Length: 297
Image (cartoon, rainbow, N blue to C red):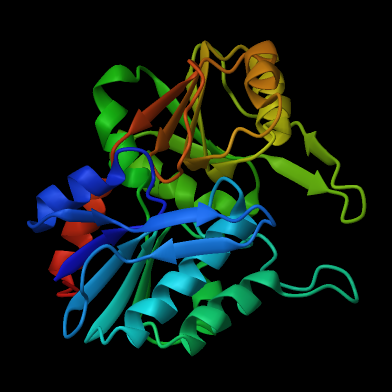
């Protein structure tokens, strides 16, 4: 087996390779002056089982072009099998046609990967797991949220777990089970045209609690900031966000701090550095063990 790191998440390749044994090989890549993408494999992959490690953020469009080229190149160079471990899958939030005339973006991405003859795909906490049906057999979603909860279990006193909306309740339940805590969800509304989010306060007893808001990702931080503001006003002692993917776009850190968010707990699924408010937990060995248990490697 050859493990090839393309644009891996921060610190991910090292732990992943250590858990599986072997050596990490980094695919060469660059951008031409006109913006086109170039990659090159540094080793022979003929007759080898190849695992490509890659993330889709930041600069999602570049990351997708890189991985399309890499998967196809591995096949062209005679790899026996090609697997992709892509902790963050971009375009996953557009998993259906919310307004007439829109694409189902994640369908396009996954169908391209399937057409490139990828043997299997492993992703982390994709926005909606049913999206993986567009890839077909061989797609696996790993939730790292319970693992993150286990890692902070001893640091959390008097926890209350909340989902930011009804759609994230299964994620909240999985974390609440680990923390042996109560859980609930907030009433969120998003304008399909403007993207503006509003949160309707619920009668949730947050007084003196460490409230842990659980979701798959933070992007601009607007939704989480609104929720945190309501919870602090309701007497929450601390507000912690626990998410698989902390994109932290724009002035997200400023919004979260001003709203009273004390900490963001996340996994190393992205190729980026983080501000001080974010605590990153390495999930590379957890993903490797998931793959070993299912005999994918």
